[in-house]
Length: 134
Image 1 (cartoon, rainbow, N blue to C red):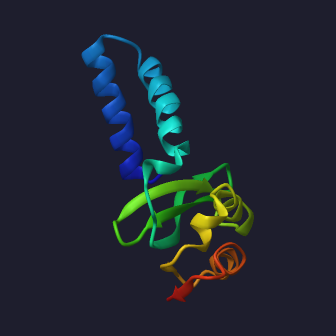
Image 2 (cartoon, rainbow, N blue to C red; image 1 turned 180 degrees about the horizontal axis):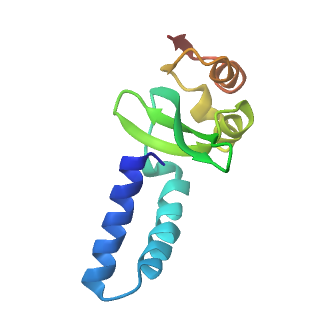
């Protein structure tokens, strides 16, 4: 999660916890539980006509400050974040698309990506019927 989004999420959880006079972890556990149910509901974002992938460097870890990346999967037409998957490698993004119904992946529309060769592979494997826009 990006620094700004991470601060906003922590701030929002902290605010709710303060309002309810309870622990931050209690509120965060509820957000995670109910948020996962919403994310896993295939109807929560409807038909996606244009999907995009982009990576974000969200932290540098360890003594050698190893970069840690995530991939954002977005509905480009609506400007809606669909999900965030670990890394910017092919496998996690392909796994995300594989969890969607085939009819949804075969639907019309288009896909867009940056110059990432990995994302090109994801689209070629998982969304072969969509035209790519660069």
